[in-house]
Image (cartoon, rainbow, N blue to C red):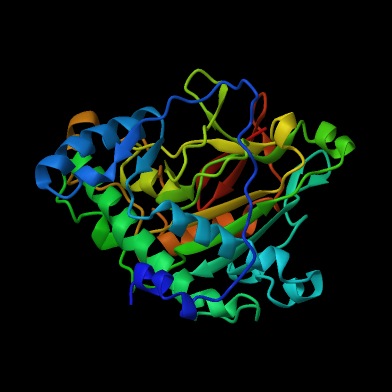
Length: 370
């Protein structure tokens, strides 16, 4: 049974309160000019070749792009946001502790990442909760309130993996002049790995904490995996670091996806596709009374994949490789995700210039931006 069939059989769909999103901001913001990829054209080889050029340019210029016609209708997207709110609004704090992830012990975010787990700046800790569900939804136990929705979450994961992630990976492989399935074969749905659905909720902070943290809710960083799929939502807070050094806002597009490259894709492409630095800041004044609910699909290569540049790419042979592991063996996906997950928001960072801090993971310098 696919998601659409499941959703149409109303007697099988468990009920939950509607999540009412915030109205769009009226603030005048400097938005990033992100390309829009229309997956409706991906059904033919000719269409994919044309889209591949767009995706290649987007990933080399921005590291971000938007996707439309991704196979989910607005009603399905609304439903997944309703479900996304369940682990936050229908589970109390004591029960959240029971299902908290063991991040430091396992290097995995599965379960809850509770508030105030990460240090942001000047002694201020985060006010972000997220709940992570492996694409194998039965990998661990979940709160009772969420269990009736697991079939829908499982179908949501499969849709993202096979109908969004794989088509985009084909475009990016073509952009490297590799066989279409070169990157798909490194992201098998049934493989061991941490590709996950994440529901994430941001809460406001007291004014004194906003001042100390300079209104930054999540400092500038790159993602761990290959691609992050974000379901666009109206609360303006996500910013990307442009090539000119300025922070640009990401504009909400109804029922669109925001796609960005992570470390693993940058490693595999030898720096040709760049992992984009992005952050989350306090929303504009007219949205500060709302919580910000996010729905993500964090895609990572299979745990066993070595994150070395795909040197068989004719593109890399022509333009060269800029992201290398000097004197260090390239990590596997498992080594990289565990190292970064355990360190993030926990380890001491070394100042490295104005607004930049560094740490070393698996012999690789990782930068953070305030």
